[in-house]
Length: 129
Image (tube, one colour):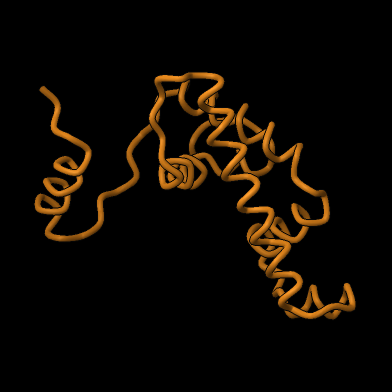
């Protein structure tokens, strides 16, 4: 019988000397399900919010700089980015359940998959990088 996720996490921490476990490898079917779910969520996110997320997280543009360009307060940019992240999280999780009702993924799994397959954030499926 496989250990419970909490037990697996604890045993991985003990075996790695207390360091956080490395990202697990995800099978191609799981990555494809996440790609489809992300595409769905991204297509339903306000374009300007998505633009801010991509500029800050993918291109390292500072939020203060974006606020000056857009003539608004940095808090406004932050709120737009938070709203986009919440929308993407909610819609991605919901659509994964539509695609595979038995697949159990947490948001941390999505983050790990996106870290492993950074092309997903650019709207591409591909090999891990």
